[in-house]
Amino acid sequence: MWCCRLSHLHGRLQNLLSRGVTCSAFQQPNFKSLFPLAIRWHHTASKSLNCAWQQHEDHFELQYANTVMRFDYVWLRDHCRSASCYNSKTHQRSLDTASVDLCIKPKTIRLDETTLFFTWPDGHVTKYDLDWLVKNSYEGQKQKVIQPRILWNAEIYQQAQVPSVDFQSFLETNDGLKNFLQNFLLYGIAFVENVPPTQEHTEKLAERISLIRETIYGRMWYFTSDFSRGDTAYTKLALDRHTDTAYFQEPCGIQVFHCLKHEGTGGRTLLVDGFYAADQVLQKAPEEFELLTKVPLRHEYIENVGECHNHMVGVGPVLNTYPWNKELYLIRYNNYDRAVINTVPYDVVHRWYTAHRTLTVELRRPENEFWVKLKPGRVLFIDNWRVLHGRESFTGYRQLCGCYLTRDDVSNTARLLGLQA
Ligand SMILES: C[N+](C)(C)CCCC[C@H](N)C(=O)O
Ligand SMILES: O=C(O)CCC(=O)C(=O)O
Ligand SMILES: [Fe+2]
Image (cartoon, rainbow, N blue to C red):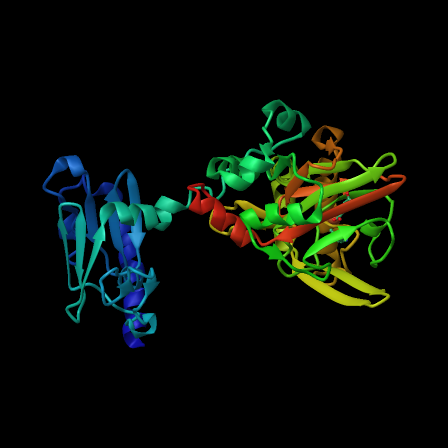
C-alpha cells in the first residue's frame, strides 16, 4: 500500500515536472541538471521511423505516427500478447490481471526496429509493435467514430436515392447482403423488394442477417387492428413517432415490418432520423443535449388483456452516448410509454422538460419526416436505436407482420462482411 501511495505522489510530482520537460526538452539542453531524476527521451537510430519514448515514474510516454500516447504500466503488462498471457487461437486473455502488482514498472525498455520490449521485474518480457500501440491506445482511438453514419432529413434521404435490394440477391449473394447492410448502417433504414408477402418469407429474410429476438409479442408477430393486445399499435389510430420497447433494459435493436395486406385508406409509415434531430439539439443547445444524456428515465409497459399479463420496465436516458467520444448510439423516445419521472428533483425535471421539448420540436419538423406507404413485397428494416417510426391512422383491413432482431447479431454479420460496425 505504501508503495502505491508514495509512488502515486511521486508520480504526480514527476508528472507535473515532465509536462514541462516534454515541451521544452529540445530547447533547453540543460534541463536535465535541474532534475536529478530526470526523464530521458530515447530516440530510434533510424530518423525515418520518427519514434521517441520516455519512461516516467507512473506511465510510459510514446511519440509515434504523429501521436503522443501515454500508457499505464499495469495496462502494458495486462495487454501482453505472449503465449503465456494470451491465447491467440481463441483471442482470449490467459493472464490473471489480479496477479499483476498495481505498482508494477518495467525493469528495462528497449526498441528494436518497430518493436518495443518491456522486461518486467520477474523477468517476463512483453513485446509490442508500434503500430499495434497506435491502433489500440486511447489517444489513437478516441477521435475515431465507432459507427460512420449519414444523418438525414427527408430531402437528404430522398436525394441519396439509396437503392433497395432485391429479395433474391439479398438471400443468395454476399454482395446483395453487404450492400443492404452498408445502407442500413449508414441511414438506419433499408428496404428489400420483391419479397413474397408471407410471414415465412419475411422470417427467412430476418434470419439471413440476424437472430430473431423473441419478446412478449412473440417471435414473428402478425397484427391487425383487433386490440388483441393492450397497446395502441393494435388499433387503427395514428401513432406519433417513437422507438419501440423503450421499456426494455435493452430496447430491441432492429424492427422488421412487412405489410401483407391493406384494403383501405391511410396507414402510411412515418420515419424520422432521431440522430439527425439530436444533432440539431447538440448544435443549438449543447447543455440540453447533455441533460438528455444524463437524466435516467423509466419506461413501462403494463398489460392485462385476455391471457396477456405483462409488466416491463426499462431505465435509461433519452440519449445514450459513448463516454469517451460523445458519440450517440441509442435514442429512447416514446412519450406513450414513458413512466413517472422520480429519478431527479423538481428543478432538474423542469430543465429536462425544456430539453425534451427542444428535441421534440426537431423530431416534429415536417422537413425531417419521411413518409412511406408499406406494400406487400416491400420489407422495411428500421434501426430502433436510431430511427423513430410512427403511422397515420387508417381505415379498412390492414395486416402487418414482422419481428425484432438482436442488434449484436446484425453487427456481427456486418463485420464478417468487412463493414465497420
Ligand atoms: C410491433 N409490435 C406490434 C409487435 C409491438 C408494438 C409495441 C408497441 C409499444 N408501444 C412499443 O412502442 O414498444
Ligand atoms: O402499424 C404500424 O405501421 C406500426 C405500429 C407500430 O408502431 C409498431 O407496431 O411498433
Ligand atoms: Fe412502434
